[in-house]
Structure formats: structure tokens, C-alpha cells
Amino acid sequence: MTTKGTRRQFKPEFKKDAVALVPEQGYSISKAAEAVETTASNLRRWLKGLKQEEGGVRLDTGERAELDRFRRKNKQSLMEKETLKKASAFFAKEMK
Image (cartoon, rainbow, N blue to C red):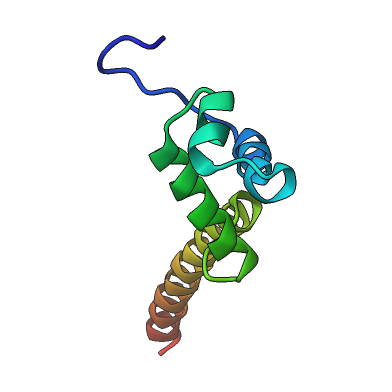
């Protein structure tokens, strides 16, 4: 049991396995939640999130990490572009 103020962290694989109990094993949401020692509201939220990922509405963990990596790289490229613009403007003035 957790103490008040602390939250349990569940890995994505655990969530997928827990959600799979409902359609694959015929568990009700409340029975599946009890079996994996979480709340029914957690299991409903995980089920909704998994359906959104499968439907392409929401990014899964790997896609989210890849998107974050691309955003960082894009930000860096934009900063480098600005630096090069300023440098070329500076050197253009020097050449005159």
C-alpha cells in the first residue's frame, strides 16, 4: 500500500497487459483492476489511452520521444540558421 501523497508508477507494458485482461480474458473492468491492484478508473483511463494510440489519435511513448527529439533538432537548426544569417550580414558589411 502506498502512503498518502505518493503515486504508484506503472510501466506502459504493465498497462497494456492489464487492459488486455478485459477483452482477451473476459474480465470486467472492476475485476481486472482488482487483479492488477489498481483502481477501475485507472484501468478505464488506460483503456481509453490505448484505444487512442491504436486509432492514431494519441502518440505512444516511442512516438512521443521521437517527436521530442525532432523538435529539439529543429530548434537547434533554427538557431544555427539565425547565427549564419547574422554572420553573413556582418561579413557583407565588412566587404563594402
